[in-house]
Length: 176
Length: 302
Image 1 (cartoon, rainbow over the protein chains, first blue to last red):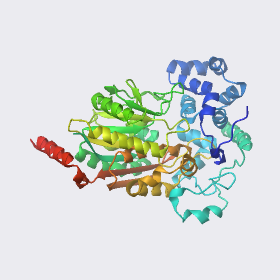
Image 2 (cartoon, chains in turn brown, orange; image 1 turned 45 degrees about the horizontal axis):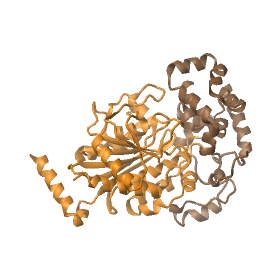
Image 3 (cartoon, rainbow over the protein chains, first blue to last red; image 1 turned 90 degrees about the vertical axis):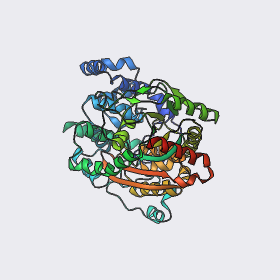
């Protein structure tokens, strides 16, 4: 069955971990939980594909884990607080994973954060119909309509393209 | 009679805990963050609560996806720090207050808030980082703690309005507890941040500032923010801010903002912090409360 449409699907570059994804991603997340134990981290590292068989993942989920495609894991029901345990097993921090998911280099991402982070302008809504926050008052409103092209805007415009782009940027990052 | 005297809100970024544990607090990047809590530690040392109720969320430490309670109140005698993949944080075991916790759970459940009772729970950075920021790094935590874990990981978390009303019910519960206790409530998490997906790194200072402003003067406005707005404006993980509304609901309608701090970033996150005190004179209608207060002060001065 196709995934039901939700109002939050309009938020760009975001995979909301809802009940449907939670059900779909149970195996990924329980696999990640198992990595809290050192002996399991060692067993996974010794033979990743073999270790994953215990968790009844779909072929697509297995592939996403083996390739460390973090966006794809989220799309298939993983949650960041769980997948971060896989990151920690590889010796990576939350910030490292976040940078990886945006497709930016670690240095560029760190600089963006020091400079105040990614702006919400241009990043509110895929369709452009998303309303400006109710607590921001009248000031915020006209700006949102005329939102300028934002260099820090997430590249992914449509749901499907997010997947392929992030996969590409991930493989680039891996080579470094 | 027990009473809530103040509320504290603070982000609970894990990297802040790591900076403390790895003794990096004097590095310029971290000093910027920690210096914002110096006054808060002084305030806390002066305030000396008898009990702290800490509203936080678990990050796949105590609760996996096997069970996801919306509100879970820690009624145990102690809560050990969780191993989050790097070994447990070198912080003291958190001592609970099982008597007050049981009293609160009984009271709020009869007030129609269907809490989960937790008698065994490890606590992660979500709880211990704000404690470090407000209490420093002592050998033992200076007061017992009642943890209140809120699901903000699996969508949907409870609404802001529900959180606020739970805070109210907790206030009522605390005020019906016979022992003289000064209670401080912590709301933790936030502020704007997104750590997942291609939009990771989102920060919205305008939203955070408006949230802080309204937390003091018009919290009811904040209770009407829909989840979609939190996620759109403050990032997918910024929705944690609903937990601050439990703290705010536990306070009186009129509060004094005694301190505020805001800085960007700590790791992926905007760090926000605020201290709100109930107006002592606001107890005008509650003569009993004033009397209890007097009794406590006398006892303390002895």
